[in-house]
Image (tube, rainbow, N blue to C red; front, side, top):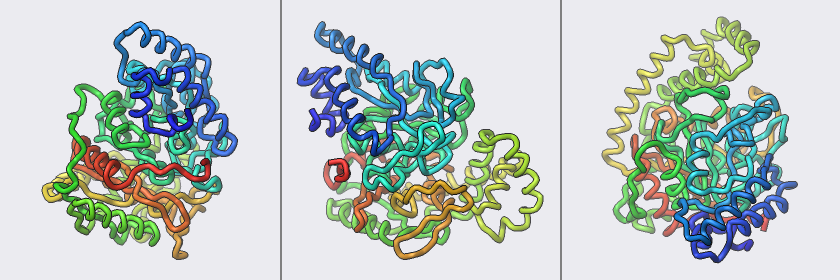
Length: 479
């Protein structure tokens, strides 16, 4: 049974349909793996096994009766704790949010109707606002590749649970890399869809009960294989299903390799892993050519921080916002000198006036048009996700945190926003795939960025890479 739960969701579903395993047996195996790893990982932080077992038994009975079942029928599954689940409200790391009566978030509802057996919630940072998954309610989640390091955020518990074989599928969200950063830090797959493809209803933040489809934020699948990403996205997306296609033929694929920009720092070991990965793609027949930044990154980062600050500012306590309003007066002159993503620039972003937001939105529209030209030459742009691999837990205030590169350089913490910003600000799809490990044994992932609504394209390329070049590797720490 341990071998089966280490396989991807598609393989587990084949076993269920073939009646080689029951939904109850598969759920109990997932619960056992959770029990084995919880003290070390703290990935799944809330559970409802009794209700899940009841649902698993009902699905087993329906299968025996020969009833038509959904595409996920009997598959055990956990959900990121920023999504409301019936009986398990999204806490988003805050105790007061946990104590609510809720119904399933829209994406969760789609997965449940497809037959998923939802049994647990995975850990997140407070209000999904960090690249580490820790909060005062549930504590910190550890990376299964190195327990002293973070699994990333905000879908960190989800990525850790996937890598450890605790769950075969997860639903995450991404506004500042929250699907892609945990994927690279834990060595799993994720897909950031084109904005608007999946409903955000029932995701917290914003405040519970909101019907707002937040700018920049997206809901997407996480898994241990690219084919599983395609399966889950087809279930949770809005409207007609995305076009289905076989895995791409790598010999017919043109990829632009983006590794350099003065505003986007990159650890030398991460760069080396990605360059080796690019060589592997070339050996598999893909055309991979180094390209400069696909857009003016200074303009994009200035626009992105304003657009992002306008969204995240809604979640800040009123007292903090009043302090930022006061600080804004003194920081106006220092922003140009400090550059985008500096602390001064982020204060200006959080307190941006509507006219400033409109200007940023206009820049976004211009850059979207410009990058469309690049996609006339390339099927996808391959880029790093984070400047560094998974870093040690750091609970200091944001403004005191830094990232340490393997060559001794110090990188600003907010640089975590750089590589992910193009797909996020321009509302493009990006599929995260494992690319290899550093000499120290930490996973490194890359993102395949596609044109607007080009989700089927990046997912097809990811599946071809997964099945012909390299895919998920289980962390040896938990073996």
